[in-house]
Image (cartoon, rainbow, N blue to C red; front, side, top):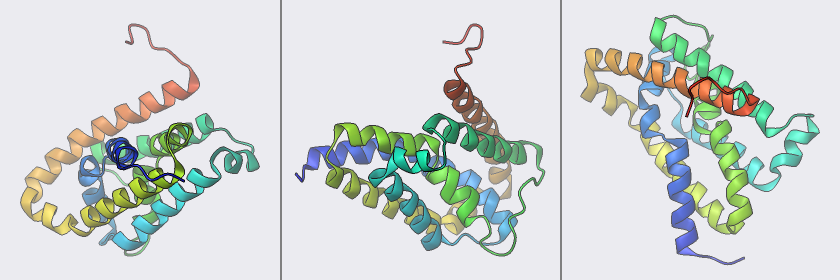
Amino acid sequence: MHLSFIQIFACFMVLFAIIDIPGSIPIILDIKAKTGDIESGKTSFVAFGIFMAFLFIGSPLLRVFGIDVSSFAIAGSFIIFLIGMEMVLGITLFKYGSSGGGSIVPIAFPLIAGAGSITTILSLKAEYQTINILIALVLNMVVVYFVLRLTSFFERILGDAGLQILKKVFGIILLSIAIKLFLSNTGIVLPHAK
């Protein structure tokens, strides 16, 4: 095992960009409005557990269930698509249950520990030392935890009108991400796609 600050920084930046917790704030606020609360510690811990499982046993874990990374990504794309539909149409498709019901699904998975970030973990493992990826992952989970803890602060800054606008815009972006994730893992190529 070899500690490298350059590797840690590189892994941190890649994971931060893929997890994109700042970009998920409108989605998290929408889920919070439906469930009443987000359990930041529980959400961060579950997402970290998913990442750890894939960091150490990755592809063999999926093979136990007879699935590959692409199938996993397609399943995640369906969940992301449905969340986007909820946001754009103002409907409720998920039954979140009691307070904190959205903390695990869909926030911990697939928003934080989604198909893209899990695939990234598997890719990073081929390039960097495991200890450096692990440290970068822990640092990212600290950022995730604090962003989740500060959801009320973001609500106050944005206000109701700001939240509604962001919800619709990010809903469309989420739909686009879901479609791209689906297409890239099925091999379907759209005409005129670049």
